[in-house]
Amino acid sequence: MSPVWRRTKKKAGGERPGDGRKVTLIGKPGCHLCDEARSVVARVCAETGASWDEKDISEDEELHRAYWEQIPVVLVDGEQHTFWKVDPERLRRALMS
Image 1: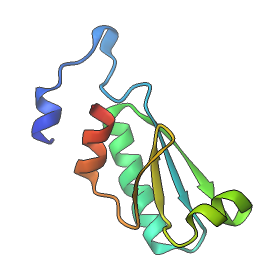
Image 2: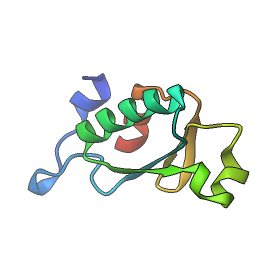
Image 3: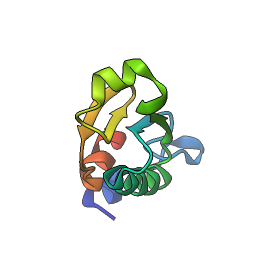
Image 4: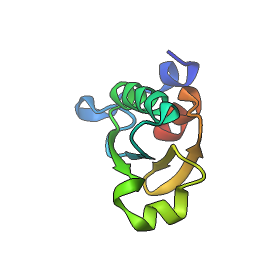
């Protein structure tokens, strides 16, 4: 666990620091970077209590226009957090802040 995780106390009721946070992974099928990002996002969200979902740019014209050169893209609470490669420590810190 990261030093930040060890210093963070659990909230009342057993909630984890990331509870209530939302991560969105934007990618497309057949993208190896998207597969790697999915693994990191799933692991970090499970650790922190954040929820996550995935959107396919090939099924959404607006997402395709906005992100086609950057996939995979990770949003945290609707704001762009990163693209191409997901750093698990950086994502964990963002979810715990």
